[in-house]
Length: 89
Image (cartoon, rainbow, N blue to C red; front, side):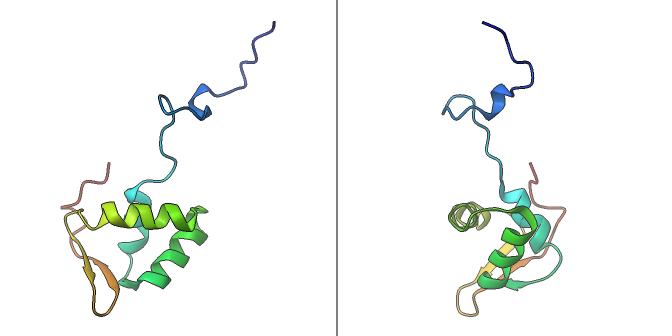
């Protein structure tokens, strides 16, 4: 057997070592530019990052809990008012 050093063990699809490819930080970088409707927000993030629609919606649930992010249910508009107050990790 010969070891292939070009392979990346971090890309193995196991629950133990798989790190998320996309995080709420990817959403915040798009939202920090301007207020967007959910549709505009989703399209911008998907175009910029290549993120799937399902992952986008999973992250928006977490994004609602981020300080500085607001979502207007009536208008369906996302805004990010205070970039310095959010945890961008």
